[in-house]
Length: 160
Ligand SMILES: [Zn+2]
Image (cartoon, rainbow, N blue to C red; front, side, top):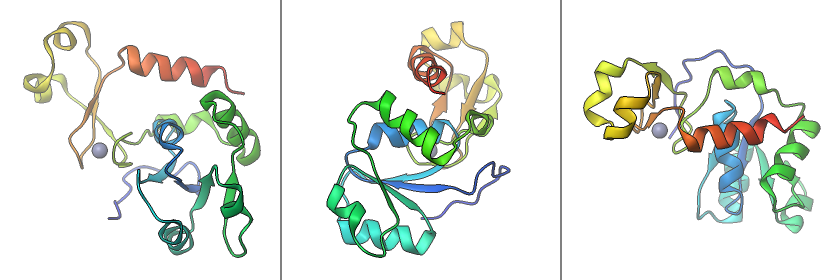
């Protein structure tokens, strides 16, 4: 399913992460990079999607990355910090893309939403402690800058 992008693209780079790189896909989405991820996908389907949508395959499968006519980038490390560092350097990624984050669940660009509109959906602790929210127009997921978000951001701050 393709989504209409409502935001200004800061980068034309698009990715598709293999099934070992779900965490990396979430970080790329938070940063605003259009990144597909399926927990279960056959190599041939991965390659077909990559070619059809002009997406770079991010993979931990060295054999796959070496195949002819496959636009893939091999990640040696299993460490999220190292994976991000390597990608930032290799593709000159920008943290500025974060101005237009995507849903970590479904890859749709998310939007600011007024607290009044979604207050009935919030856990009690969140209602009291947070004022700024974003919501995914596709899956409805609501984002606030809680511990999980802060942990992700502090990891990203360490990337150069
Ligand atoms: Zn979503």
